[in-house]
Each structure stands twice: as C-alpha cells, then as structure tokens.
Length: 101
Image (cartoon, rainbow, N blue to C red; front, side, top):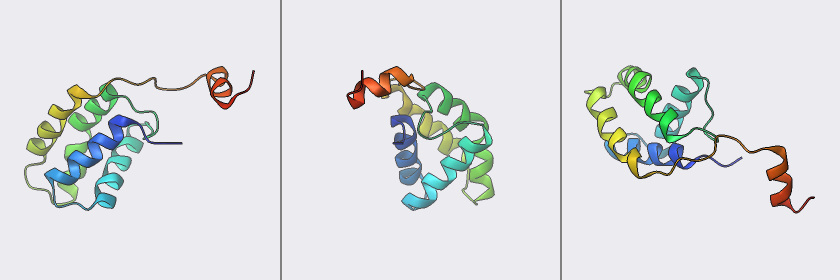
C-alpha cells in the first residue's frame, strides 16, 4: 500500500531540516507513527500533527538532533498545504477502482 501524502511530506521536511538521510527520516517517522498506533499508509495531516508535537521531539532527541522542538515546529508549519485524505477505503471502493462490481 502506498504511503499517505502527509507521511511523504513530513519525511521530506525532516530530511531537509536535519542531517538525516532519506532512509533515516522515513524510519524515524515510521517509528513515531508505530508508537502512536498509526500507519504511514493511512495517516492524515491532523493525526501526524499530533505525532510531531508529542512523539517526534523525543525520537529526535534520542537521535542527537539539537533543539528538536524547533525542528518539529518548522515541520508542522508545512502541513497546512496538505489536503486531508480519507483514512481508509471501504472494500466496495477498492473493488470499484479495480473494476469489480
């Protein structure tokens, strides 16, 4: 399943705000989501904002990022432009897209 637009945006923002590689940024965000009970494929901008505010600062501090709260505030500012996505598809909508009836 593809990652949500919110997940992809936050990973890109974390990579540009820190010295993390693409893999490190994505892994850090995935761990923060996992500890929050969320999945990268279905996380919404509203959900990821809460993760950034409450969980990500600790993850960044554990990885030696200076001033993790400032990094998180910067990343959060970019969320406003992301349209909210549906958190999950119904079985009917998936079959409809696949050409089933």
